[in-house]
Image 1 (tube, each protein chain N blue to C red):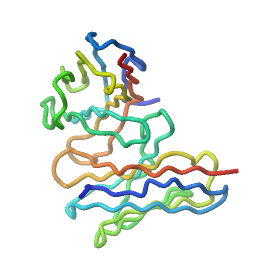
Image 2 (tube, rainbow over the protein chains, first blue to last red):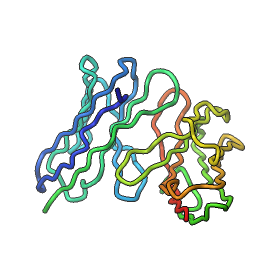
Image 3 (cartoon, rainbow over the protein chains, first blue to last red):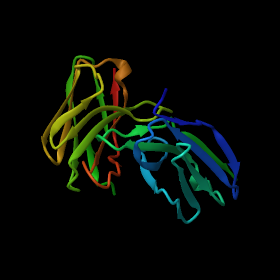
Length: 110
Length: 113
């Protein structure tokens, strides 16, 4: 079983749409959770950390459900510039090894 | 501007060549990583150094040889590579403890002929 499972998509949505990505993790002792964004032929960049109480940054909302071991990312009012691959990343409570989901490809269409 | 600097940005090498990829960070991070990424795939962990000691080697072939000369530098020495080793090689760093956000460099795009 993979440490982190993520729907690879692709998601093709019109501008202005709301889109949600989910990710599940297998290690219940995981302590840190992140969403990264990766543009084509660029490095992954931190979009947001995910906190237990949920957190919001502008149009982006991240939530964590420890009981069900999943995290989610909601993007409201999608922009063309949101087109990218979104990577779910999990860090267990021991060690320095980060576990990556396969990434979800998003294309926002005019 | 990225806080993790990788050189070179692009590298083309033959299967008999020896080359090195370099990575530098000045954020005081004590964990440094090498990842390999193929198109449309997530980054694949190769090595982790923690406090300048190799802590994880994900069964990487010996034609890849990591080196951590000090807490700010990480090298990846390449020798006798195969065409299938062509990929984007990403260096990253994080705090070894506490806030563990992973910060990536821009990557070195390697082509093996």
